[in-house]
Image (cartoon, rainbow, N blue to C red; front, side, top):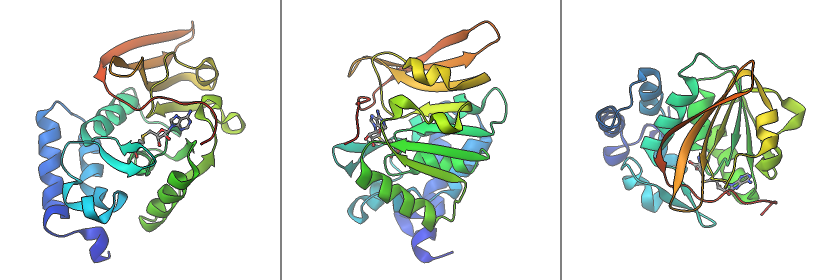
Length: 219
Ligand code: SAH
């Protein structure tokens, strides 16, 4: 592996192990998620000037007014998505720089990821390519439409908060499928986990969160 991927000092594996320990203290229990986060160099997803801060538990700017989600929220959403069993096909809305995508790609068979801002999608493609993660398809689109050609999905994960869960996304869930999505206005959002059951949908409210808004149309 290249030195850039391995990291050094503040970007080394030791630093990622410390991050995982903190995540565990914050309540993350799924060791598979923690191990994938130890293996994944988060520092390559942010600008070089921010690399030394990339394992702090904070969101960091990735350009275009967007942020890379904080490690805790990435871990928590992944854990919630996978808690009910292994997933084959997952749709991600809001690729951003691709860090969450990279975590998912190592834990499910196939990831379909949609981003409305093309420059970010391009960055994400480069990062996943560098990590040799090939089980990801990218689409420049408004994620509110989902990705009908590949529906239904066993899992859907959204990294931006709509005011209500888009009906289109509910319709693209497979029976037994799980969606993890922040819902609400800025500063008062809640993380929901929706499961498609034989009868309809089960909606669990998990915790308070803070995400960028889910915007419509392409940027
Ligand atoms: N998990 C990403 C989070 C990026 S922030 C990361 O760690 O980098 C959320 C992203 O959602 C932003 O890039 C924003 O452009 C995107 N977004 C917001 N509304 C969207 C929509 N309707 N469709 C697709 N992407 C959207």
